[in-house]
Amino acid sequence: MDRDDGGHAEALVNLPLKELLVQLDAGQFAQIHRGTVVNLERVSHVVRGANETAEVHLRGRRETLRASRNFNHIFRQM
Image (cartoon, rainbow, N blue to C red; front, side, top):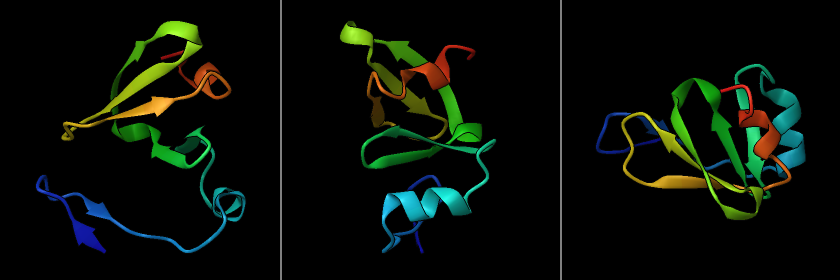
């Protein structure tokens, strides 16, 4: 596992995303794009975009993650 500048751990996992998702707690982790899974506890805010997309901002991170319209429903309650 590598640590980013904010002291958060990151890991590369060599599993198909479908196999990884069944091993994760669905209440804590969610797929937000074809190749992206996010820890929902780390989401600071979401900015809605055009065409029902969204930019997901994580606490302690500068970069944003793109949520596709197929997964945008996850953030309707946030």
